[in-house]
Length: 176
Image 1 (cartoon, rainbow, N blue to C red):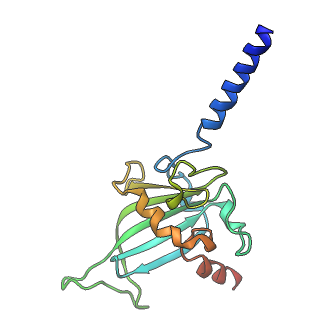
Image 2 (tube, rainbow, N blue to C red; image 1 turned 90 degrees about the vertical axis):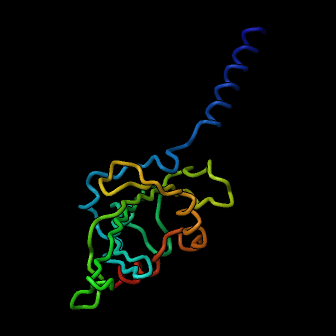
Image 3 (cartoon, rainbow, N blue to C red; image 1 turned 180 degrees about the vertical axis):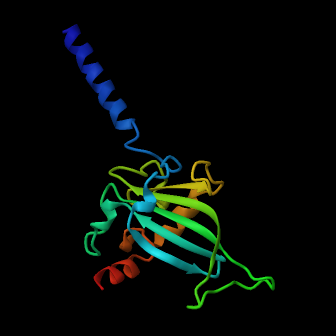
């Protein structure tokens, strides 16, 4: 009987430990994938004059298989490069012949990834489904100083778009 009780306690302890173990990486733990520049673009040259930025957004091959009706599945990763918009000597934002902002230096690299059970340690009021976030400096190795709750708060209103900004824009362009 003692052996059975000890075995039951061990099984319960292991089960409780497994239930408490994190199911995946947490915010800040996703590395910048080395090959992301070979990935398809989610959106290119996103114009953000309000932030004085131009953004390039890459999506993993898993994301490229998504549809507007299914959303993005586990294994999806987005990498967003934030570039400063070039300013002219008079402080205005420089534009090219098409009227688009001109990229200057790379400021930050952000990573957004989705996996089963990811992000569950985040308070429910800020949870973005199974998405997690990371921020890096321009070298794509040094952690950025951003508070990742800012990322979560910005993406939170997009629950019906799988928490992905420009969801409709992407899928609209993909159909063309």
